[in-house]
Image (tube, rainbow, N blue to C red):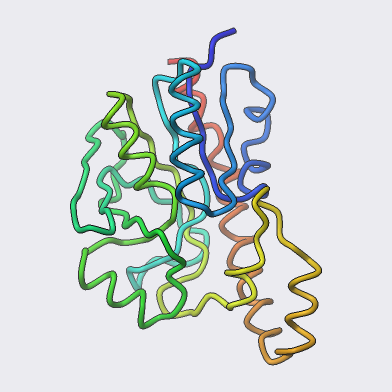
Length: 215
């Protein structure tokens, strides 16, 4: 059975939220480990295997103050770190602009600067790379993201730096970090609540994939 779509995300937990689509032979699933270069390579691999649609799937950081953890967004315009933008006007429900970043945007101050500079509602580390591949290969791009850390909350350093290349958290590194920086525990717990809300939203949104697989 031919690959129809390529779904690229950053973490194993995001891939798990795809439910039944994870085992569908028509769906290519790539986990980047929050590495933009790898996200781009996986998108190219999906295209080489026949995917006509790329799906940017997963969590996003909030830039707009009104976006709470668990909010589903489906942007149709992507801002690159260099300031350029790519629009994909084929999504049925547009929620505007998402910013791409090649580095973690962790603090409220960094989020505010990005919001003011781009007007984007959210940020992630994969979508802009997928957008570039989609434009070059003349593919459709669909963006399905759920807000995790909101604009006014910092992403703890331990959460931002303890993700393995396989997209799974490196528990040993987190525990060691907590021994050295125990004050980050409350921030980590808040980040987990945020990500749990976002992942629950993604699990509820997985049927959005069906129109791209069966369409």
